[in-house]
Image (cartoon, rainbow, N blue to C red):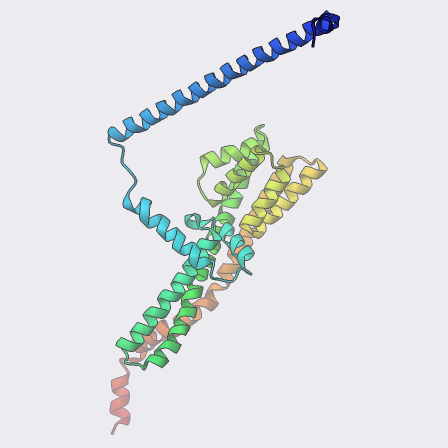
Length: 318
């Protein structure tokens, strides 16, 4: 390219190209300085964190115990491996049962299945050893009976889980009328329903307040009130609570005052609890009949007829 060609180019175009290159250079310098500054800030934070960890360790903070470092992860991995050996058809039902039981010990479905397998294997081994060593049973027969013991051990965790579910449902059903009375009082005083739930959870500590606190957390995370209440009904599965939530959702959809709903539902639930207590009291004589026949009647006959037995023996023994 000769000098005549350069001079024939428009000077404004040359100025624009030069300005673009200068702007790109300045932008590259700014980006580089920003990245370098961000990198230095990250390095400073990492060094501060390392110094704090080192200082806390040197000051004598208790390190993790052998159980927390080794035994607990080993147990979880063993339960997970055993749980994967079981059929997966009842996973949904088992997950729902764990939710209804309040997730005892934070057990996952795989962990609970692993516990079932471990209980089955342990029960089978204990049964076989007992029959062979203590009863002198042949090995083949002992193995057959150990299979039955393994089946019993397989279903023992289910019995425990069902017991936890029944106890938790009974606790929720017992606390529901008093909780509704407290909610009714707070709503009548002018609090909103969500704030009333939060205040109730702060004052009481039971299974119902734990579930209501979870409802409040779900609503804070963006879940609609109706969906959070439906999730509560599915987790607890108490008929009184399910009915109350259904009425509350319908009132919310229709725009009915929540205070009126709380008054009506509180009175209705108290009547149901009174009726249930009366039904339980009406069945008590029938439940006491075997105890009376087996334990009280023989003692009563011995006291009443005992003194006359020697007379009967003397009169008719001759």
